[in-house]
Image (tube, rainbow, N blue to C red):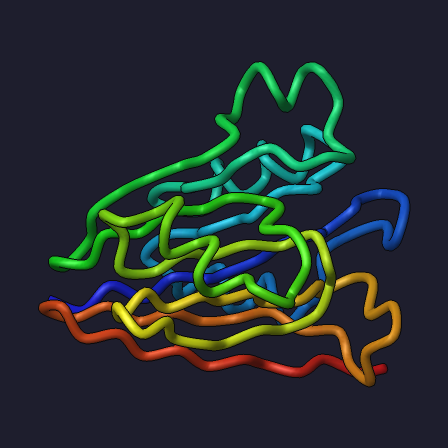
Length: 166
């Protein structure tokens, strides 16, 4: 049975925005779970997602305080629908990212990461899929704020990046 995941990173609430965008909350209402790649900034966002989603797979980021670091790991992992998923906040520079992450996460099919606020979708030679959903609240140098939807079904991986207004 397919699993549909809302994928977020770098929400930075309430510093970059006061609340999650309505479009993200609408996706949350239909998601089977949430993946968040860090930089939540406030615990209220984690509490909200945990209250509304069947599960949250998340990690702490460099802008998260001690309370979030107590609640969240540096790397989160879960297998869903035959897909080995890992979530980490930082992966370093984009140059050389694929071989570095392939070496660091050899037992992983999909690695979700954040930090840069720049959407990313690539696959390493060994088949590791690297995904960054960007940020739904802080587009930085990007033309749009973004979030992702990841659908996993019997080992199959379907990724959709969704744009929000500027």
